[in-house]
Image (cartoon, rainbow, N blue to C red; front, side, top):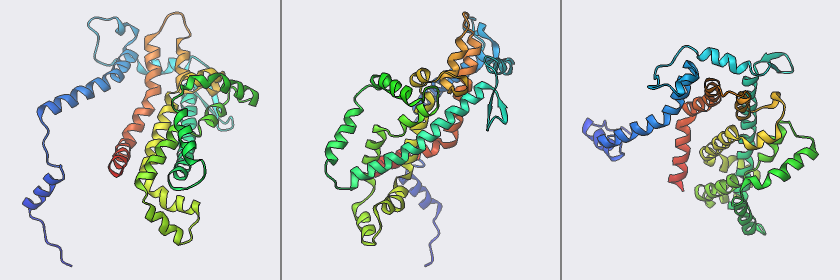
Length: 305
């Protein structure tokens, strides 16, 4: 069938219909600019202090131009503790970079497995009929109301008896299942996956796992990506539990490594700001790379729900 060419007037009308040509008011630009400035200024100030020195904290008026001291600060951060080895003791790496790699490894493992377990449990609670389903989902929701600090002591005792203290397993294993992830994926699957599609797959004699993997997972993939990213960010920013369970510099995560920069009696703001910026830079890079997919996943869940 031959398609008619769209005139510029028709294309313009369609663009207005979908909101692509809607102009923003000057107040909207001012608000966005102010919010963007307030969001980025702390990172820029960290770079200013790290590159100029600790005197910038008390200097009036403060300098707003970066200095040439940042590479020296990075070297000073990596000189706090001795170097360590990775890849079966074949490669030597600075201790702070090793902490970043540890955090990335822990965050990736938790995010990947947490998405899988949350999707499986959410699919069971949303689409499978079994005895005790309502009570179990209410129990899971109830656990979200308890502060996580209540479980620190029994969790530490359990890790000590298992011999996992000062090990990355103590960070990974307890976080492989999330009550919030199960509840959220249950809501997403209930809203986005139609029962008729599952019934059609059952008529074709597909098993439950085959239905989950071939039918449900492609539909909820954007929401699963958002959940995995949130889990990764939460793991990267976690401080209390890694501080309690990790002791060796070889197993430090990024947030624990930053605390080692405060070991001296005199607080070196330049050193602390440099370490904090080094620990934050991977998250900023991650947001630049996957920010569009994050927004798309959130919007897909909101529209389809």
